[in-house]
Amino acid sequence: MMKSFIFSFSLLSLFFVNQGQMLGIPTRIVYSKDAQGLSSQGVILNVADGYGLTIDFIPTGEVVKQAWLADPSHIGFSSNGNLCQLNQGDCQSSGATILFLRKIKPIKFPHITSSSDGSTELTVVTQGTDGNQKEYQFRIVPIKGKPAYTNLVIKPDSERPKPLLPRLREIKKPMN
Image 1 (cartoon, rainbow, N blue to C red):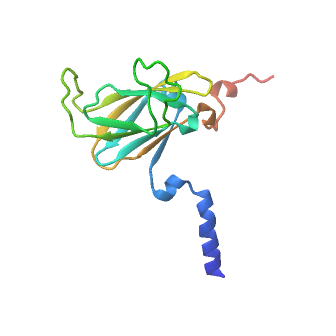
Image 2: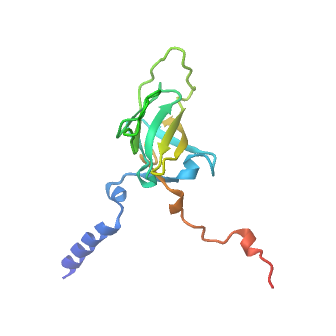
Image 3: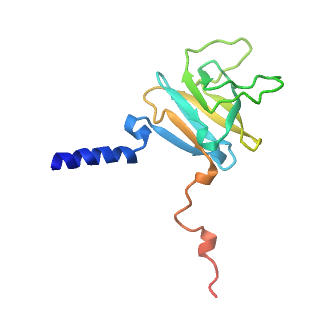
């Protein structure tokens, strides 16, 4: 009886555990306006030796049309779809939903300056189902050691949890 209960409980728990938690993959969640720098100072992302960093736009419903690194000498990236090329006439069929960044051995590019710590900026241009474009900015910082996360999920602001405490001005409403 007890073995049956433990097995049933174990099986049931699989339905309530996030896949990332089951696999032990650290995930960081950022909301769209924060990643665009509209409601925060922007997002700093760490990329560690031997690990990659996945940036997932799937929850936003947006498609990545373009992405570029300010300094590609320390970080490389790829995507799960074709990105629009500069001066490409029609790129309606192009797009990705996931970007993957990884550290690379430093490359010396002529006429391109590099930061002393290997950090750079990643710019991402997306397009929503409504045709509107958004620009995301990330500061990418190479680190040593084990990263705190290997997956960044961008979520729409509509999924941002509501504050638990009412705003201060709502608390100070005059009593009638």
